[in-house]
Length: 196
View 1 (cartoon, rainbow, N blue to C red):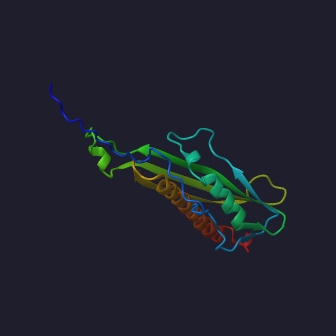
View 2: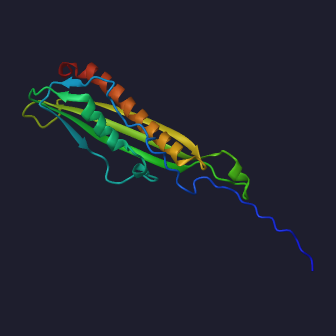
């Protein structure tokens, strides 16, 4: 009888168990507390979500916290204050996409791919808002401005859940910050008479 030694190879695979952040170690939230609100000559500031009915392929909006809708709501509530003058100031969310696609695969086969830090996923975000001004008693817009932003990040398959959550937050924060900067500049340039 011949006895052969049996060797067992155990390879830890990242991402098999969710890693929860320690208590009190929460992700930051989107905030505009460091910026003064923009006083608008209007009776009220209205928020409207006017997104297409179908989600884009690879949509992962539900995996983001906050997602682009959340960031949009925080932004409008924080940055725009109506002074009560007759007229309507409407901020519309017309695009809010967060998608994921595969950009690399382990073509070697076997275990070699587990030890490489290949970029495997690409997360892309797109956001667009339209700001509409309506004069008292009018339905048609008197004027409008738009702002749009796009960004992405890539990750390896073995990124930790905490790091992935942080990267997702940074993408959302970057997009809403770009929107804020563009919108404020356009408002001063094209609707300066209603910005106080």
